[in-house]
Length: 385
Image (cartoon, rainbow, N blue to C red; front, side, top):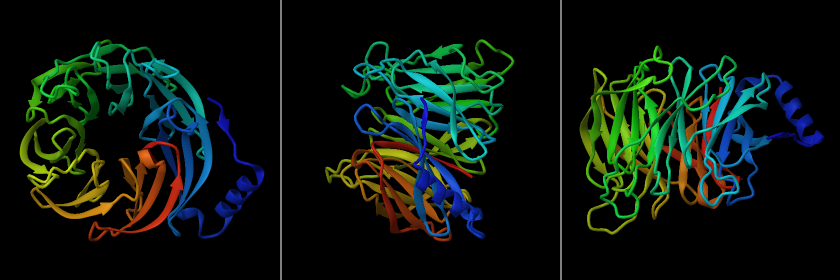
């Protein structure tokens, strides 16, 4: 996993740009995860983002197999990537890789550990930074998906799995729910609970986080899970910035669910269909994120239309759709709003492209396309502020 440096002229141009008065303050770095087994991508891409002009510039690539999901620590000094390996891949073992982030943004490999499962597709950090929670999707019926807990050492390097949790599938969907498929694990804003979305079980499982129990830091909460409509397939959960609401994509039923977050519990308040009834349209919601001010919710839809769907968030947390904007590519797997809120960057997985859209922070609406950049099978986006 040795970093590949840019040619001298390119590196020199980048250095000169950073030293230009008035430019450095508008620069940030962005990291892109990707799938390598079916593309020419080497792994992780590091780009420079010029917020003044709305432009991206490649800086570095780091060889890593299928680094499909990226996690930054609170200090933005460590990066964790899930290596979504599984049966049929050159490396069949699911892993997580750690990298140190230098003062100049350059990535340096720190270590790697097995996740004891197939296709680790999502990860998150405990609020104290001591554990990594990894979602092994597990496409094979046996053993299926699981949640892996990996402790981190004092340098931030992942250690062997200390706890593994598995769930019973619902069996409603004949192909997608024959086994558990853990798709994400998201800590509550206060870090005391972990909400685990299992696409194969039609449930969000809830665990208490107890760092004093080093071997088994996760214990089932009461209640231990949240039931969802049969065959709905929960995927990704996000909390509103104020922590009072949470929003969930339901991949198989093409819906978005809204919950009130009260005393550590999620209470469903709203269920929104992304498809018009009776139209036969194919929709597949994926990524879901709120704006930093909590006024807008964005959802990627990878179905027939490849949209970014924008919702206004009302005072009580209710959602009201205000826009459907083409992603300018196929299968928008992930996206991210830039730190200044003025742009949104989309990872179109199946068209091998990153697309930068203008965003109006006041209205939440997405505007013109500013740049399209080729990247093989992009899968996740993280900005380093």
